[in-house]
Image (spheres, rainbow, N blue to C red):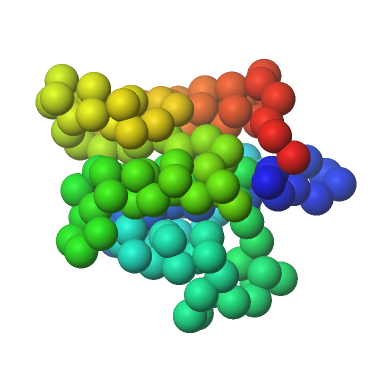
Length: 150
């Protein structure tokens, strides 16, 4: 299911309802000179539509399948927990790594997300430099260290 081109440019899909957090994540990847392409959706419903190729996301040329999903926990409508549950229950994309990227430090949220099948759980850094560092480590690990499924 891994989507990349011959230059090892991976697709990252960020599901985040906060426009500022979407911007900061995008900016942090740019500042890291990341060669990976970031796509964003604003909630869990849009995330599932993107993965299913429904509604605005039918064109796989414009909206390729992601290699990695960054998923906010608390979003209106379909939240991160529900979206994660749906992702893990769909064989078409259940193997895509999902990283929870959230402000919640709740032990209950952390345990629940891992039980639902999250690959990692990361609390959003409040400092931009820390965000850059976390995203650099994350992309290095998922795209350069481990082998992802095809």
